[in-house]
Length: 381
Image: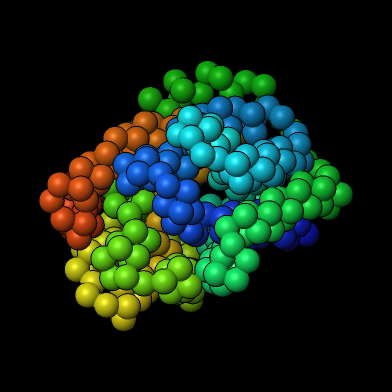
């Protein structure tokens, strides 16, 4: 792998970004519940945070391919600081939606930055492992933040938690200007026509279709995971934060091994296995009867996640030219984000009108539809 020092610098900055992210995001649904938002508003906001990360990726990809990468890292962190400031004053739904938009765009910048930088700094045959190393490092930071979030809230409150998160974003924005070097990736000013390259690429089309079916199914239940733990199993904020940390620890334990397996067996097989295991995990989560059941479900889901992002990033980045990989990745993620938006409404309807547990069972069963397109996809090895 080339530019190893530059990769380490990027990992360092990314780890602090995800530490700040995890502190407020882990208990975001509970924070909104504490603020008096309704179940449907919480579901919509939670999914907007994640879906906008995809939905705004097209714009993020264009910016990344056309603007200096150091500026992009600074922008992602300073935007994150700004929405944390607003978060402490949120009381109405419209301000909440604005916060979700800013947070989603900041996250989309970081997602597409990782695709761009790692595609340039690695060879295809090692890319699954390199992506796994990146996710391993950022997940350590996220796990630490998740584990601390519940205790910070119980001892100092949500406002203090958000202030700590904001300070981390502010410091990381400063560090990015000092530590991140020029790694020789020149901004590409010919990225706008790359939508044509996407629609002509069979691998990217089928991959995107599978991810649309997968993510739109899973996001039926994602926003309601901490709510099921609190309102159905009656767990505390500390216990819920610990459960999120357990899932992250499980992911960390298997991440590097999964990355090497992806390089050996291919991204297609890895995604097929991920889709199947994820369905089993979410159904198991919905059927959990106590803390132990929920912890086991989180461990299982943590392993399943390790097969997801490295495989999808490997498949996409090896199928398109590096010069505009961020833009095409952004287009693909944006299409996925469009189909995620209605998912929480489905979950909210099931939660309010049928049974909270059924939210997760429906999500797991619907997710199996994502297997169909990927079976018809070939893979460049």
